[in-house]
Image 1 (cartoon, each protein chain N blue to C red):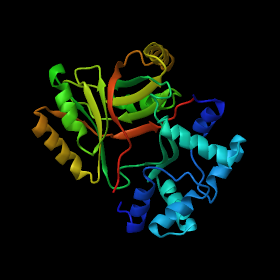
Image 2 (tube, rainbow over the protein chains, first blue to last red; image 1 turned 135 degrees about the vertical axis):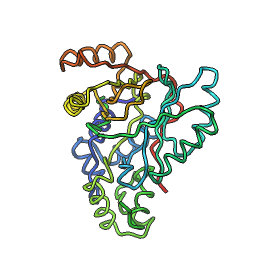
Image 3 (cartoon, chains in turn purple, green; image 1 turned 120 degrees about the vertical axis):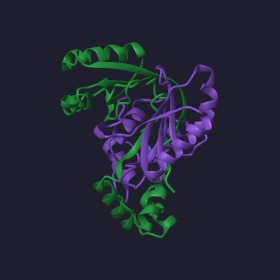
Length: 148
Length: 158
């Protein structure tokens, strides 16, 4: 179970991480704990998969890559088959079922912008269903923070 | 933008995580033949230029109790999009807020926001409260809760 110190660590490290020679020591001091304690707790939370990652969140387009949110409208009895085909692509970063006519939603992250269209065409060909391509046009907020 | 070969190596070296050691940037540098101060300089630069949006922890929200994951989509008249986007984006419960293209006729929604909460009930009541507080009653919206999660990981870069 997570305790108050774990929650403090997560709340603090969602906001950023120092870029200096002893960053963990800086964070530990701010939180009033030992550096070794911080390292052990991070390791444990990663092991328990409470944290997905500890590191950079990249801006795909500025890295030269392509990024898009895609949706599909699938009959219930086709869902599993199509999910398997779609998830097999390494470019599919995550995939959620959602309650709507458009019932499968996945994020595509490719090494080049052009490859988005290629992968989508392949998915349509393989599955026999249309993919709705909805790339971001304007970003109003991207905090992705969760208070604990 | 095209990354230098060195930056591309650095991007790949830290994408799955920073080492949990006292001098993480020194350790990363050892892997790719850079000094600690060079790594610090390159990461600082990428942070400032926005290639790195954020450095820190990425939580698995589901595992932390945020089990209700709602994509709330809005059909906003174009002339109000900027204002409504910024309003929604400034709400503490909204974790992402993007404009995306409509796909008519099936999909009239052009503003996408994510709201996570501890239960569907609480997420729904927060949304209605937000609609009233921000005066968005005239904007058509839909809440798409997630069902099964098939895959969750960050994007990968070579």
